[in-house]
Length: 74
Image 1: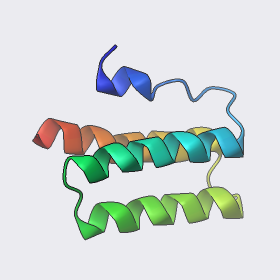
Image 2 (image 1 turned 120 degrees about the vertical axis):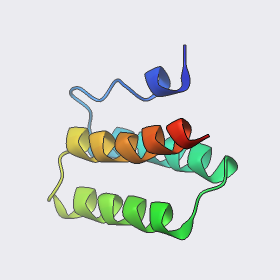
Image 3 (image 1 turned 90 degrees about the vertical axis):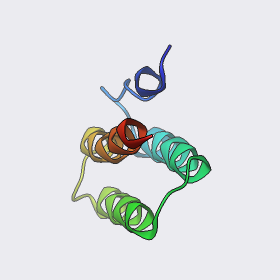
Image 4 (image 1 turned 180 degrees about the horizontal axis):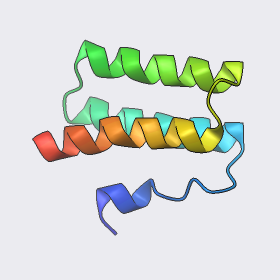
């Protein structure tokens, strides 16, 4: 299983599971050298998830974009 496949099961996800997936991606990003903008983008996504602006699936999708962009860079 490659890195992106690890974080691809968002369908039917609840908020707590989504938060766990997002935190796992954030840790991966941190370990390969995140910059401040990536952390602030993920914080914004988590806030939108908490506020109900983003569904769990949307929050995972947006975080995955950041994660994939970081993985493509490295």
